Figure 1 (cartoon, one colour):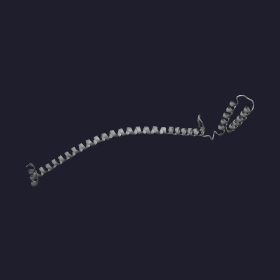
Figure 2 (cartoon, one colour):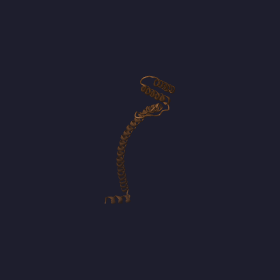
Figure 3 (tube, helix red, strand yellow):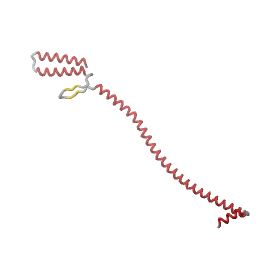
Length: 163
């Protein structure tokens, strides 16, 4: 591109000078076309170094081929990373769903266990009352048996209880 730019500048200078110096019509057009060709040649010559070219009242031309290539590579890399992570995101979402289901199942089992514990506590309380009643009955029966066998202390206790 640099060689083509140098050739374009050299030819534009030669042809514009020849056209203006000889007796040809439309010399202003020749000068204008020559200047445009020289600017294009300069652009071709320095295009890989040009970062920004500003033309007054026209605008700014940014020759950012290298930056665009780097950005394209970065975008491609990001796309690859996102595609690679999509499987991970799917696995995480699936794991989260499974975890949610397990939590619900665990909550139901926990409620059932709490109900069973409550039933066991009631049964234990009933058992303790029954054991206490049986102990009292056994003590009373022992006391009656002792009183019938002429145990004076047992007889006095029965009398005090009745009393």
